[in-house]
Amino acid sequence: MHRFKISELGSHVFWLKGPERDHLVRVLRLAVGDRIIGFDNTGAEYKAVVNKIEDQSVTCGILEQDYPEVEAVTRIYLAAGLSKGEKMEWVIQKGTELGMAGLIPLRTKRAVMKLEGSKAADRVERWQKISGEAAKQSHRVREPQIFSVTDWQGLKALLPLTTQWLIPYENEKTRTLSSVLKDFSSQEPIALIIGPEGGFEEGEVLWAQEHLKAQSISLGPRILRAETAALASLALVLGHYGDLG
Image (cartoon, rainbow, N blue to C red; front, side, top):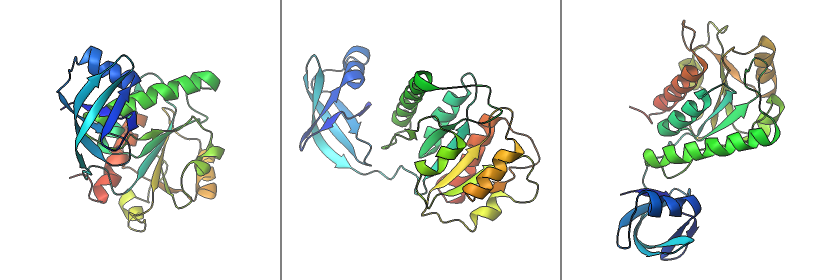
């Protein structure tokens, strides 16, 4: 059954509006009587039947409510240095499939991409749509949040104070991810700070260590591209806590 993000939830019905309504009617060409699945980012999903199709909405009758265990128990966030081209989109799409809880687009000194003002807001809106589509495809019941583009100074305010910060860094030679995770709590959020194409300047790493209490870690002897480092570290953390494999 096709999956849709619920626009409005009632006691026995829900409604699809805007792009969700148009996708059902114009793209998939579903009709009254067809069955679908809706989710509302609360962890629940609803099996439903299309009851009524109108110009502005589709009304769906709820047949069954469920709370599938598809979300990662440990909330893992990526704070990713802005990357050019489609690399950010690729990280968001695949990170959503893997199970990330959200992504913070981070301005860094060596980032090639520069985003400010309305251009940044438009890009975040596009990234959120990509995350939403990937959430549907991977049968998630919560879309990862794509935060507004931020500077280093804004990072701490975006996530809970109990967040545990990690920063993969090519100049870290001794501290490994597995050794650090032994002292982390799976019940508290974890945020991975990933550099842009040119990597971090040393001062940025020192700032994260001082102000976020971030632990710098090595991902191995090989230099990874920014998008590879993001997804590899995300997968490793999720695997460590038993969510993958």
